[in-house]
Image (cartoon, rainbow, N blue to C red; front, side, top):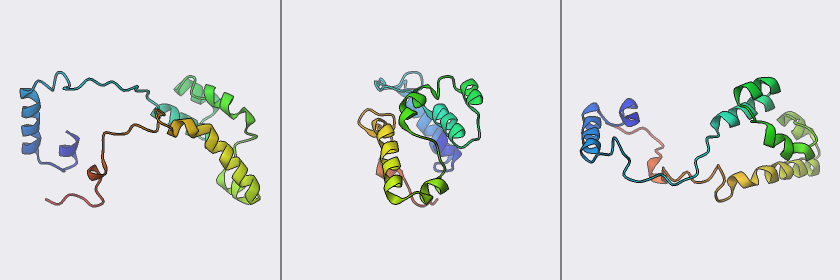
Length: 135
């Protein structure tokens, strides 16, 4: 449906694809069971970002996404303060490097195998295009 909406395929092609899915019974039941550990994070990430950028107060963040800041407060007790990039760039290089290393260690688990920022296997390199598909 999305490919048709974006004009990647025409409506006739989309109808043929849906007819094929229906014929195989895949519109009612997927052909493969999902066995991943899905944990929606987008709302939490946006809420945390809103607080860190000063767009949201902690009270607003709690109302929008309860417990979004709970584990961050525990993880960040050792971090002295939140600062913007301009303040960070004014620090001596050794201090900047120390703070960036500390921040990287806090989020390291998100990037390791099984972390929330891994496991995006749905698209391969061939699925990404640098220029639009021509008719």
